[in-house]
Image 1 (tube, rainbow, N blue to C red):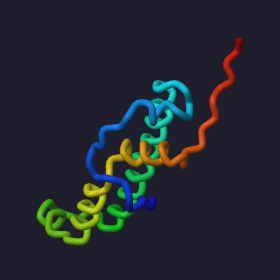
Image 2 (tube, rainbow, N blue to C red; image 1 turned 180 degrees about the horizontal axis):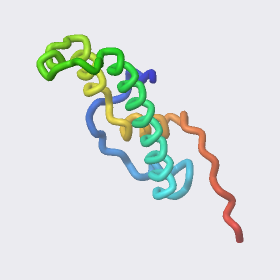
Image 3 (cartoon, one colour; image 1 turned 45 degrees about the horizontal axis):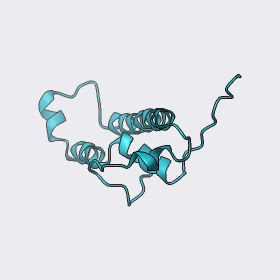
Image 4 (tube, rainbow, N blue to C red; image 1 turned 90 degrees about the vertical axis):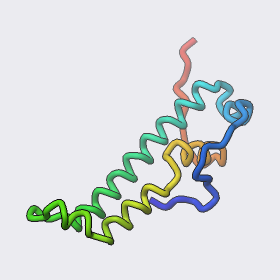
Length: 106
């Protein structure tokens, strides 16, 4: 998964008006952001697991696991990435998330 460079690593205070301008409802906006954050987290976890699987072998001991520098660097890279919620919020504010509102029956 490719992360845009302009996403902050820390939490940013947001104006509620900015979040609900597209949907008209803050709760719907937060729901959209939360669902996207779950997708991003799942993608990152799958990607990390796939990369770390290359280093695992059934005969590894605890000492060998801690000494593997490449594995440590990969783990540190993923730890430094912005949190999925921050990424999803930025995507939502930049109109990069496609969502479809369910028709309300009247």
